[in-house]
Image (cartoon, rainbow, N blue to C red; front, side, top):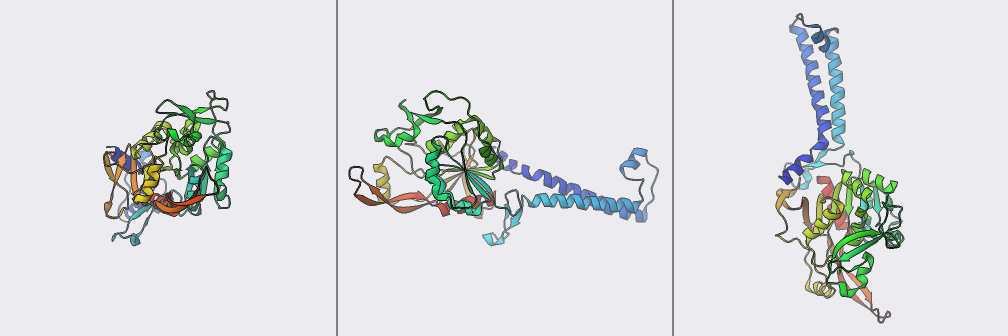
Length: 396
């Protein structure tokens, strides 16, 4: 029933233009009818209010022409509004009958995107900005200067903007499953915490006390309100994505937004943060702190070769794959070739795709900084992510 309700709710945006189109057709039909009636019928006596409603005070040709023009105007308005949502046949996509593709709500216009991620994740999505009317990066609430520095490589890209979620100075405290509490950014500095995971997040003032109610900035509120898509990630779930949702006004703004909400699931678990997490655990954490399930969750389906797998295992990390036991039902994404089925978890449609690439990374030893070695690691591929997100927006 949940999948049926979600699918029917997607028709809500078409209600107004379809209603105008229907009214236009009816008025156009009435106009034509009046012109024909004038040819072979005469007017009988009718009550005064009926005469008023049917424009009896006007000559029949004038009534017909008036209704024709009113019908054409309503029909044109309806088609104009429908074209903003619409729906373009794409026979080249492989289906013999073509497919219908929903647009972004503004005919022919590229989408406006809000990104909630850390500096590295914003860099990965840099290529998405080339296809967006505006890409606003809402940086994590804690230590905004650090994230600005990390994202400095995007400063030369057009249509990319950075905003802070709140003017308040705040930190994020993480309580682990062993009840150990520390700054969420410092977990990676404690190797002995690798087997643990975050049990609870909370905001703190710089002095360690519970903060007062933090307001959302105007720019962040406008970016969320005007977005066609809100992208969560790629980035650390508890460090980069969820902290902003601890701000009540920010969380409420995202909940009120009609934008498509897309979560890019981590490739690997994070030591001390998401150890042991599967796809469902990531979605449930978003539900807990953000109050919603993402519309779509992108999960990397690419398998990892043994050498890379051993490297991550040594760092207490494992791939985040979809467990067949995690999903409750399946659904079909509009326009999917062959009606390919997608998994539904807690109201989110999970889409598996090739989203990553292996890259060579040089690492230095802390004991001997002059020495370094090359290792092959797995990273989200910006071009693959951009193509997948744009295709998803095009189809929904």
